[in-house]
Image 1 (cartoon, helix red, strand yellow):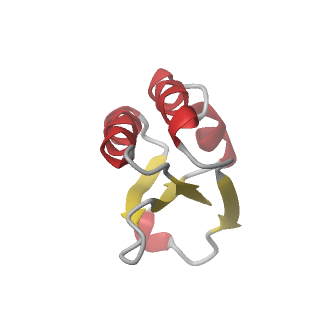
Image 2 (image 1 turned 180 degrees about the vertical axis):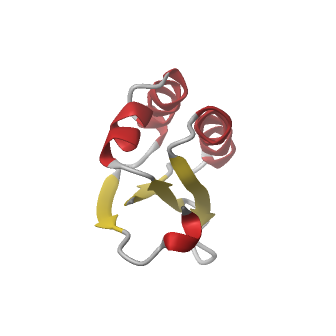
Image 3 (image 1 turned 135 degrees about the vertical axis):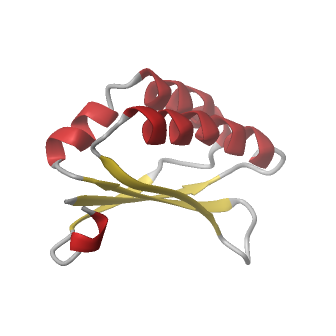
Length: 101
């Protein structure tokens, strides 16, 4: 399993727009991608402009397929102008996450 954590900071005044853009990605991923096991959009309780996206995919191939979907591309197109800088990503292999399978 592949875990991706994406850290994003949204420009002031664009939080609602960001959430709506990510809803497109979330709903498309959860409804249409069998290789996605988990997709959480988390908001920092101390800074309403900071988000962390937690995603779990069955395999590297499933993750790469996700990046080719229209819902992913539309989300990125919408959020790129409203975030403060590049998205930072951290990847992990889930070694003991059988409960997600």
